[in-house]
Length: 305
Ligand SMILES: O=P(O)(O)OC[C@@H](O)[C@@H](O)c1c[nH]c2ccccc12
Image 1 (tube, helix red, strand yellow):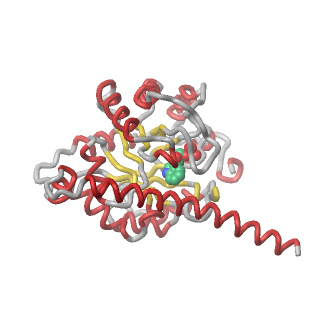
Image 2 (cartoon, rainbow, N blue to C red):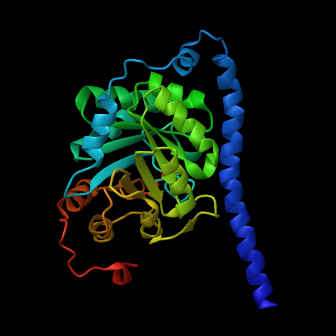
Image 3 (cartoon, helix red, strand yellow):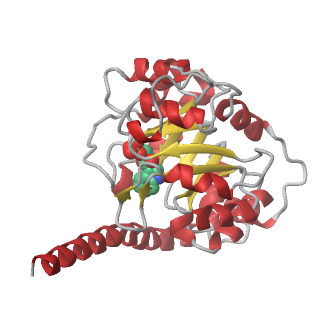
C-alpha cells in the first residue's frame, strides 16, 4: 500500500513538472502565431534574413564568444538575467534589465544571457533590447545571448536582427528539429548554444555542428529532477580534439563545486539564482575565476556531491 502511494505521488509530480515544460512550449506556440502573422510579408526583414544566405559573414560574434567562454586555465562565468525561474522559487524584481546586466559585467561576468520569455523567466522584449544596448555600449567585448523557448527559425532571425551574439536552443524542446534550427543559424551566421541534458541530446547537437554545449543539471524533460553529476556523464560523447566549448548550468551556487567542473575540463558555468539578487555575487564570480587548473584541493566527485 505504501509503495503504491509512493509510486503514484512520484508519477504525479513528475507528470506535473513535465506538463510545465509542455505548458511553456504550448504558450510559446500560441504567442508565435501572432509573431508569424506580424512577419508574414515575404519582404519582411526577418523573412529576408532567413531567405538569403549571408555571403559576407563577419565573425565578430563567434570570436567574442570564443574569447569570453574559453580561457585556457580558468572557468568563464555567465549570468542568466531573469526575474523568476520555472525550476526554483526565484522571484526578484528589477526594472532596468540593461542596468542589471551592466552591474554583472562590472563584477567581471564573462557573458550575459537575456530572457525574452515573460511567463517562464520574467523577461520580455524591452528587457532583451535594453540588455543588448547597454552591454554594447559599456562593454562591447562581452557576448550577449538570446534565451527564449526557441521552436521556430523566425526566433533565430529575431535574435540576429536584435544584434545578439548567439541564441540558446534547448534540445529537449525541439528534438530532431534541432538539426534544421542549427542549419538556419549557420545560414544567417548566428552562433547557437545548445542546451542538453542527456548524452543523446549531446550527440545530436554535435552531429548538427554545435560549437557550444550547455549542460543543464536540471532535467527539464524528465520532471525537473536535479542530477548533480550529469555533466560528467555526457563528456564522453564529445568528439575528440576539444573543439566543442562546454558549459555547466543548473543550481550552481559555489566555487567548491565549480572547481570540479574546471578540473574535469569544462570551460564555464552559467549561473542564475546563485547570482541574481545575491549581495555577494561579485565575490562569488571572483572566487570562481581564481580557481586554478591542477589545484584540486580536497575535492573530488564523491565528497562534493
Ligand atoms: O538559476 P540556475 O539554477 O542557476 O539556472 C540557470 C539556468 O540554468 C536556467 O535558468 C535555465 C537554463 N535553461 C533553462 C531551461 C528551462 C528552465 C531553466 C533554464
